[in-house]
Length: 82
Image (cartoon, rainbow, N blue to C red):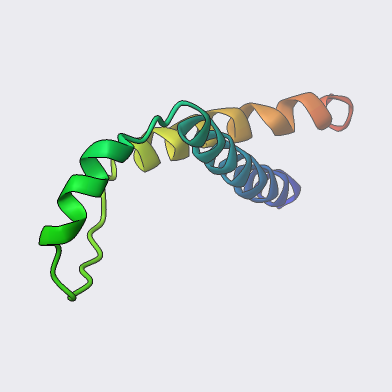
């Protein structure tokens, strides 16, 4: 039970850290095209549409967090296993 709790907590923390780091890196490397946006602004409608992006990045981040969370209990619980 102790391994499951450590795995769950480490997975949640690592998933949140990877999501924040991913958003931070996407924000840093984003370069907006202001002139193109300004030219297209006149043709926009008044309706707002929110679309979701690809979930592959989230799945990859979840997979990496699960891998790290799987090995985290082995680091912290090494003494109690033997």
